[in-house]
Image (cartoon, rainbow, N blue to C red; front, top):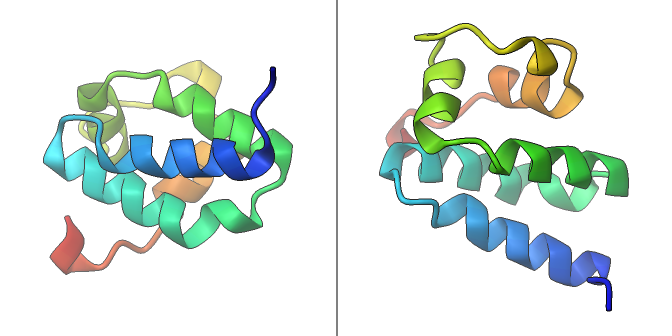
Length: 91
């Protein structure tokens, strides 16, 4: 049985806040909380793709400590994450 959109969103919201690395949790969780309800189904799938990556890698990409891999250079959700204005008290 496939997940409904509502269940998928709830699962992703949980996963973005509880990944293991506090800093990455706050970044991804805040981003998802503010954006996921406006994402298309395809955009949700691309967020899921990012969620498969290691926390350390995501954090290093978002803080530009490491370059983005080629597969994320033209990735719309990664671009939105990179441009997202995180409240300083959350990171």
